[in-house]
Length: 416
Image 1 (tube, rainbow, N blue to C red):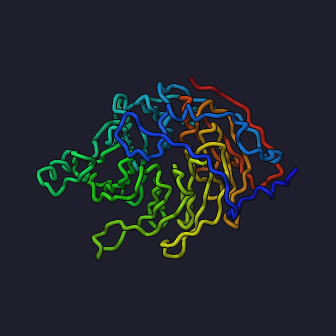
Image 2 (cartoon, rainbow, N blue to C red):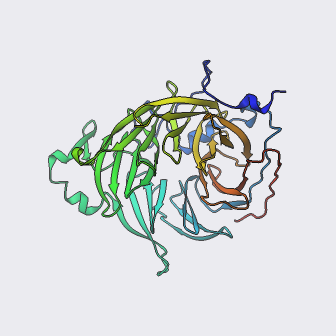
Image 3 (cartoon, rainbow, N blue to C red):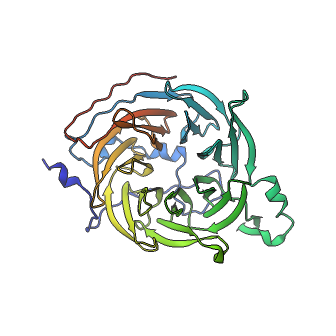
């Protein structure tokens, strides 16, 4: 049997076979080449877990969910942490608030406002992105019965009225269709927050920049040649990374006053040919980026000092199907969720490789979103996963610094 070290994953020199999947949106006008995943398509993409590469599991830990949170009428699409709360949103148009530490349902909000595609929190505000191409802003307050109260929608009415009279503010979105440049022309698929700004990525291929203080749209960038699937921002240097169905991750940096304070392209991270990149994460120092592809691969790039040149330094066949989501924990661990219903835990190594230390199975549908707790709990960390099986599961992941120690988790509660 091969040793565990044989599965450490520096850059592969030989070519590998690629499992590519194509999909299209039936409910919205979209580029025919877009590689997008709606719930029906993901459910039809499911295959048996046995198709995952047969990697020995002698050193892997065994898991059972600490809690299974049910209550959504649709598939879970995104997660976020907001102080003492966990927020989960679904295709059923509802956002459920779960209160820690007992993980009981605290309240619901957002019902009827459209399929929620992404959500982020900043301060006492929650921003939700919807399939209707709008962003909604919610204020969190304990002073009223309505804890999560809708306070605005982006673009704001003020922003819209200030621009709709001028023809130069309109852009061609498709044949015979024009919109204001501050409006998205297709579903908003992802959000990121950094340094006082909200960034939104859309299937319309654009990246928009919004100022949190007054909710004004400052920029609209024609970022990619296909749908944008993921966004992340480095808190270290403010660089924004966008992952797209065109197979590229692009790095965007905010220039100085001489350039009007706008964002410009700093670098391009090339993925596999004809393979959609569905998710992106960045290291704490902002110098290392991971992308997850529709061929089941994880790829890692390291940037130079100016972050204008990027080198692919690792890639690994992580899953039997598309990687749909990722998250980093403590800068040391990478978690990946897939259409094959599994979650893999990876330990980052000094040579920038990835070493798989755990596999989590339990969801009955593709794993669509992951969120890790920023604080240590009992020598490990909490991991939250949302799936097309309409459930949110909670896991405790041990610290793998001591690889000889075996840990088996047991289910301690089920929340209905």
